[in-house]
Image 1 (cartoon, helix red, strand yellow):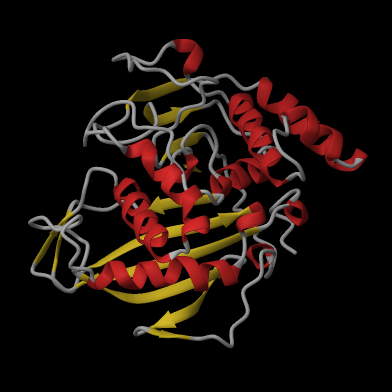
Image 2 (tube, one colour; image 1 turned 60 degrees about the vertical axis):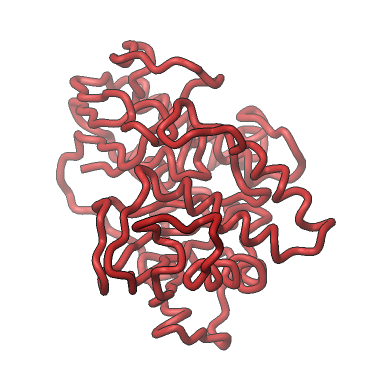
Length: 326
């Protein structure tokens, strides 16, 4: 078990690194790739499932109806599975032979490798070769890539599941292996910068407006981010509609003391400077940018790392709410 991840034994998570190699002459990606991945793979999954099982998928997909590309805000649309679709930062235009990288995360009750193999992977394989006119347009990704490779995270390593299109069925994948491996040691240096890799929206309610400048009270503090993590951890508790209070109540005395100390440490560190502005057009979330602090206490770092892996805030299905600390 990696000590770097607090509360890890409570979190079921499978992380897949997906590698698609473009086989068309030119592919032009949408502003936010996870939006199209969610819609296309979601529709292909619904088409393949029996009618009763497909109902929840079609209901989720209905949220996109009437939504136009580039409109704001994007609908609160997510698969009927606890998932994160996180596209690695890259360019918009890809030529033949170039690779596109993205990560699929299955969380909580959805952290099931069998579900991935039986439901998600076949839809992905169909998307690679589809000629369906629903997805056909000049420069479209769909039908113009090869499923080059898929890896599953074991600790801080990626183990191959699919290589050159061949699936290794003998390699087991479990919802706890993301924590396995040697303990991660961090360099003894000052961390004082937090950069959001994807847009975030930590507001409690959906907003139809996007101001040109972020209000001071919406600039995330370290404490705000830890509170977002606690809210996210409610996903891993049994039952429905769990809250942050339920998370605190579920912790052991030692876990509660450690987390409380981190929250208190975080509350003492102000945001020194930030460059946060509106998220790019066509993206979910509200804000994107970089923050600086006088320093980030070591007690907070493991919880920040966990928050970055799980994503926090709204629209996490589309990859919102992750960052790096430097």
